[in-house]
Image: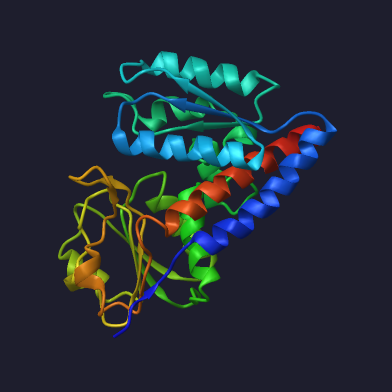
Length: 284
């Protein structure tokens, strides 16, 4: 079976073109959209992503203010920075990059992000708005998975989707988005009994657990669509996903590559969220 590559570059380019135009309009009318990117780790994969965000913002006319609090930052220090940025009229959007320092969780600090500036949808309020179907910012990675599937004309309504991973930043919000598309969703995790049996029964498998090669050929039914959300550091310093791509190719009907699949769309959607936040702030 030929496995189609579900690249995200074309979709990302279309989103970015719209975002750049809207950012320019905001700059002409007053000031460019501004993103505060708060970092408190020394993780190589995180550093790679932060750098890609800075470059993307620069290309699109968005001001990106990176705040590095250090890998030893306390929950109080992170909350203080997020609260300050939330109250700052010059900051349109806030993103808190993960992972966080040892002993600090998103639940500890994310409530300090104002919902109107929470462009990656990580606060309890943002997640609550998503769960109830109300207007708010959706976690960009989860949104990217759905948009990538739609771009490649892969139907979701009535399909069985297995999501491997239950984090608040990908797995859980993705399940909500898929339910809104009328998919039947199974969320798998570390306590799932016989993971291959569960995932191989699904029409679509989304790997979002943060473990290299977790999903292999025996996890995938013949003709299934596989979306790889993973961004893990490989031994050679490159970025690899959660899917053992070689064992999946020839069995899956389609597979998103890493890099070049979900990643570009995630970044593009996050930048669009920044512009949307700025547009709403200017109206107020």
